[in-house]
Image 1 (cartoon, rainbow, N blue to C red):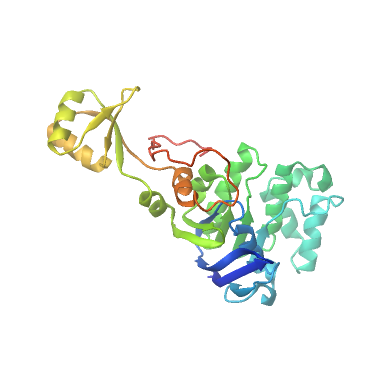
Image 2: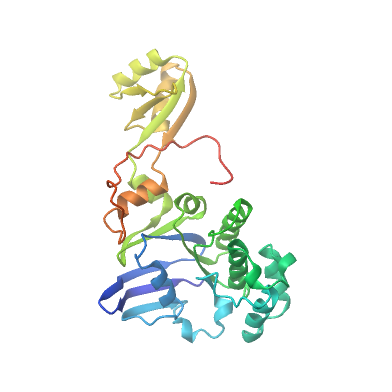
Length: 322
């Protein structure tokens, strides 16, 4: 399988250090969310991996080789960094056909990826007439053209409508499920949480986190349980005996700090107290991310720093829009 490997990577632009001694490995079979404030070095790292910039020091390789040494780069790596890069006077099909011919790919792949990206119906329209979302779909189609082992996408949901966001979410999961290496840079925290298995977080060019999504959230959340019961008096008394204190909210639900649902559920079962609802609460990805990066942002507003407690409730139902 093909991994992206970054070792001691540094990139300076004059006096500005965009990437600072970065070491990480993006592995196949999972979607890795690539996060960080503006100016954190995400786009620069992706450009270095794709050979679009030269590092000041260190290396970035794909399958053990620098991008420029790949025998058939489009069959190994598919990337979308800028949806506006396609020539506006070409049609979508001609744009993809030029890429296919120059990389010795069969013309049938053009029609396949146009169909997969949902833009087969506008294949012969000029790109300059496309909306941002249509350009995004075209850029993703180009990234998939060579059926690559590695996919790098920078803000792929930008400009997509709700149907398009669901499509890209499912596409990323499918690519990872096929054993490919998938790296996705995004500022949309809720959306990243819906598709990422693993997170890499940068701040001022340095690595802040390289961890599974669940561990990232668990490590930045204090356990809390949210519940409803038809016998709150009995349950509160039982909780107090175990050292827990329940607090009732305006919506009639009770919260218990420092506990997990399995503990409270077992306690209620032993006491014979019926529970109507029982869920663990956890920090959202946005909350956990802000707690990690609040001192790393290059551009900040004058508002007070983020200090809200991590109490966003999980729910027993799911929303297809994440």
